[in-house]
Length: 209
Ligand SMILES: CC(C)(COP(=O)(O)OP(=O)(O)OC[C@H]1O[C@@H](n2cnc3c(N)ncnc32)[C@H](O)[C@@H]1OP(=O)(O)O)[C@@H](O)C(=O)NCCC(=O)NCCS
Image (cartoon, rainbow, N blue to C red):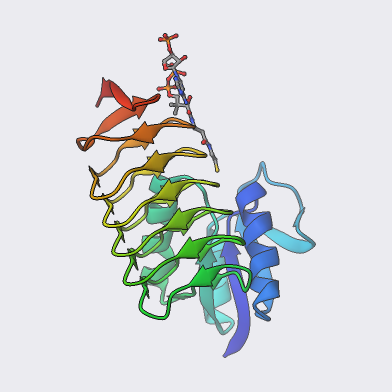
């Protein structure tokens, strides 16, 4: 088995994730990206085309990290690499603070400065981005992205595949549905239904999909 991690994605989010994996002392072997991606991502060679994944698993690489900011793409590529037999690693910055009673799913990215407090639960493939705080007893669904500097008070529930734009604030005990988009700087003071986009202070729904 080769211990090197295969990073799927080669954009800005991948760059941050590679540096984070290195901070954890984990070796990054290759990125797998698209034809439009650069040749190197944070100094790591970018192999262009998903067909490389099949070759890499045959060559003994078994650990992968999906470094794509888009929730839909992250979910799709995770299914693909897991069906090939890769195991998804967790990327948890040594500069994050994670409560020992918090639960983190496979493939999560917990960036520098993030704080996850007591008994919070973070679903698989979720991103808690730079400086975001998720307080006690929050539940964050699978494949959800909490952007930089968001602040979730205690007992907040966020569904799967939801995106909280940079700096979103949420008061305690709020339920935010699945596949919701919250605009940058929103302040959420009422529950938000699934499949909606909401923006502003206080956040109001502007679109339903
Ligand atoms: C909400 C968002 C997703 C845009 O959604 P959209 O469906 O493309 O909406 P539009 O840009 O067409 O804007 C629709 C209306 O909402 C308003 N709006 C958009 N984003 C807003 C925000 N964050 N706060 C307040 N109002 C906002 C627009 O001004 C527009 O108002 P108008 O109809 O009166 O002109 C986007 O503006 C946003 O905030 N993205 C967050 C990005 C981010 O945080 N990225 C972090 C990456 S790690």
